Amino acid sequence: GAGVSQTPSNKVTEKGKYVELRCDPISGHTALYWYRQSLGQGPEFLIYFQGTGAADDSGLPNDRFFAVRPEGSVSTLKIQRTERGDSAVYLCASSAGQTHSPLHFGNGTRLTVT
Amino acid sequence: AQSVTQPDIHITVSEGASLELRCNYSYGATPYLFWYVQSPGQGLQLLLKYFSGDTLVQGIKGFEAEFKRSQSSFNLRKPSVHWSDAAEYFCAVGDTGRRALTFGSGTRLQVQP
Image (tube, rainbow over the protein chains, first blue to last red):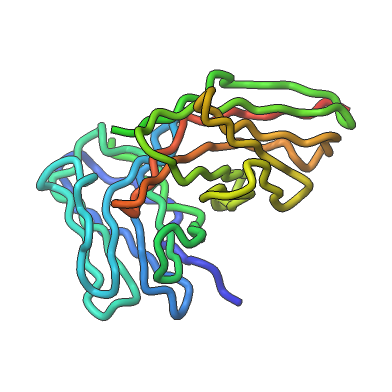
């Protein structure tokens, strides 16, 4: 079946601009996660949704970052006033509802802020 | 706060040789432990996980890992490496209270013919 789909695969934007990154999880997966992976590092947790609500947003670095999942399926990560330090690969993962069910990752969106 | 250390940034092994990738974690209680693999152009894929019970866990692609509480370690092993195993490997830890995983910084595996 289809895996987790992330669009776009690459995004180049200028400092100060607004960007949206989209994630289509595996159908039926109630849990959705966003992670950020900087060069040479492991993924870093940003936010977790259970259904439509953000159950844990403790990883969002500041108020420029926001994510939504209005219908409990597709999610959008929104970054305002982008900074060069936001450049990274943004990973989305989904899983079935149980705690620590295996995460299924998308291929990520590579964001470059110039 | 929990943390994960993968001491080896880069490892090169010959095809057919055995492999051990190290992972040390810091967490007060019994952790949930995972190994993920990231191949070029591919998303992270779960190799295996440990929650409780038998401390030696078997995963996909012939990998296994052993949980050693006394050493706070969860090392990944494979008896005979294949060229297709070349990838980046991440150890991760989770706890009972949160869904978020904490990942190590990864070990890049190169396989020589």
